[in-house]
Length: 307
Image (cartoon, rainbow, N blue to C red; front, side, top):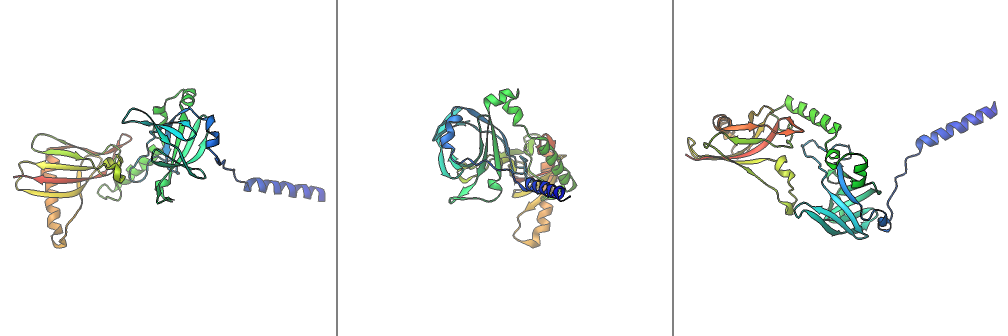
């Protein structure tokens, strides 16, 4: 009996040890020394996701895989330049541990093999890595030869996942319950479209992209802005205000600035009148969509009336 008890004790101890043991993360201690194994392999980014596995966040921002890279030598990386339509060379700078920099971007090299790469994209400010969502991005690359083995294509692999679709549908359900609440709606990946019915109204979509100050192309769909001119209005006026456009294309007045609170209600009536009399009547309004699904989203309009 004592022998059986001893065996039982040993078995339980072994099981507990197995349960407590954590998988060992393989750390790339000296990537440059092993670069020969992946040198000359062309990799295409097929996934870019947050740590929760999604490519969308609650604002409607979408992480989109777009990089194509190739390690040319121990200190040079080639990356595809869409503007020049060719691969450009960039210095590969090793900062510390598994943190590297190339093409003016910072990365943590998490996994490297002949078939795939996994990088964590980092936001670095004043030599410090931001410990927030800006560094919460994982990029997965597949070697072009590996993509062929999968009998697939980069375009297919880059598509949003089923989890993304489920997440967006949940976001839409929330927005539909509160279509006039700015805190419930989110930006459409394809933003609202305002199309003039005739020459009684003019519409210009304003781009706020400023790459030098960190405003990427995403700003144009996250924060859509329009300049609208009404040539034959009942009087001269000029207002800027936010509008919530629901999934049916109906406009609802959103936030607006008013420095005199006592006149806020009268200003609200004026802006609602502009929406009802001019914008709704003179525009074809197409709601914002994400993954092909229409939903409520917010836009900013600057409306100028000329008598």
